[in-house]
Length: 342
Image 1 (tube, rainbow, N blue to C red):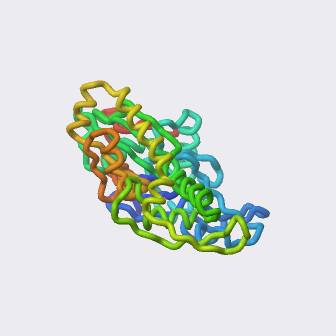
Image 2 (cartoon, one colour):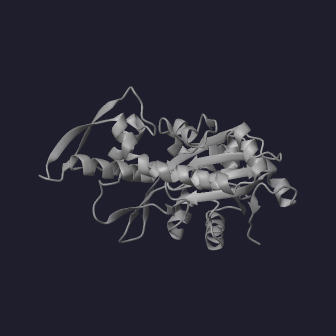
Image 3 (cartoon, rainbow, N blue to C red):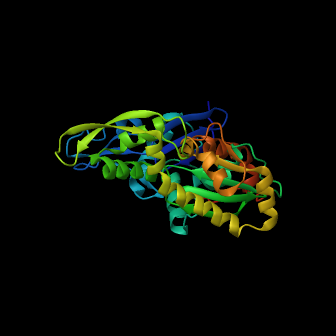
């Protein structure tokens, strides 16, 4: 009996990797991290299991984040990670799957080739690269095949993609490295500066998720934060409220707002009129910070639609493209840039 492998779409993010399988939907979501024995080079754990080992391992075990700013920074580890994750969701087959991988719009030719090679080496028959902003627009439910402008603000873990999408392609875009990771760093710096308290990235992320806010609010939440006092070196606790986090995030938020305005300034007037009517599509895990939509609206005056499932929106959009792989091979549509190994 022959087993035909299902096609796969992968949102290869800086902080997490989400895998969509044709006919099944999203079947896997793992942190983009691997644990390796640096003496032997042996891969120990991948994804969530590797993340649990952070800060709790002997000196010979190191954690590696193979994706930086949405592109491959460690090729070998990326291949091994993809191979491990693909094996988890596929069965024995005589036919390797075709894979769509989401990439940032700013990706270079060298980075494109590295992503394609990594997918092929990990077990793909063919690899297609899809700009993450196009995938996010598709995942949000927008009809991007029409001559109608849609502005996507996709705030991920390592990059923020701001793009105007029309007729299946990107008209104008900006890719910046200010995203969810930069939010965590901003919170760490703020608490260090204001309270002389040093906290880790996990604590900062928990604050961002728990009481984080991009826009000042009247009703605030307060949370106790524990860290190391920089004066004494001993453990200490302080209370942090919602407006503290809003102040901490003001600088990275300003960078995202300025970039959004730059994209609008470079966009043809006809498409700006469409965007004013259609609104801004806000997606990505970083967009889950409360008040993000209010902040963008206050800056641009354009209605903002926050996607319901912001973290997986890009993966769903890439999953929709799996049904169009045959058309892509025939060159009938240009929704994705086709790349394959000969």
